[in-house]
Image (tube, helix red, strand yellow):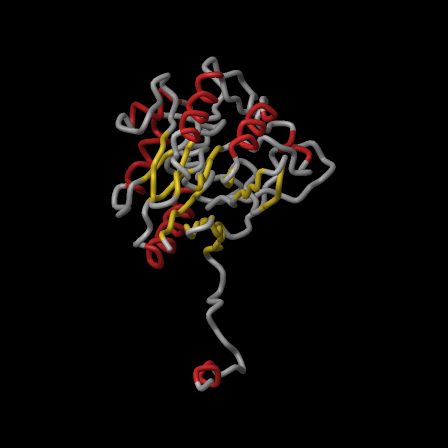
Length: 275
């Protein structure tokens, strides 16, 4: 099966800055090293938005060398912490739609990868973190789904269009999520992959199967009542890997920085090999 790697919410800061005491650049490097040590044969790496923490040119400049030696095509996406103009100053060759959004379509065998730009703005309002898909972006998605010639689609967006039960983050989800979900449900034969929440979660909304992935850096908290979107933990970072099967997709999340889990205490694998 062919592979697609996913990394969400890198939140790169200017050198020397940290988030809850964590260095986002060091954490991203550890995740990239682990992912490509095992999966250098992936067809692409998708970055699911919130590439930087403040959307500053200096932060994108700090991100660029971390990605410079990645041996596969990189598909960047934008989230609420990003800024298009600053991003394009550092990554001027990034895929764009005709309307100037950071969106892309890539076919991998029997699958179509569709990446969307859910950043709301400009103008960028202080403290505003909800996402939005305008008519141009929805039309881009509809065209990509219409033209896939039977391929299974992986639709990637930073902001989830549904509630997750995590009160603080549900307040800043995709603002026009119903229209987006309706479009996906009408087309079918797809899987939706989101970021934004910094947790590994899966579910189904209006018949649309969806998954979301952790960050390499700080993780979200399972808080179902407190309406605070800034709650974070220092759990291990992670990356996602999609295995593209003939009849769909299998999505794994792999933590990085845990003790070696490939230790089989008290169990001899040679016993299985005898059977």
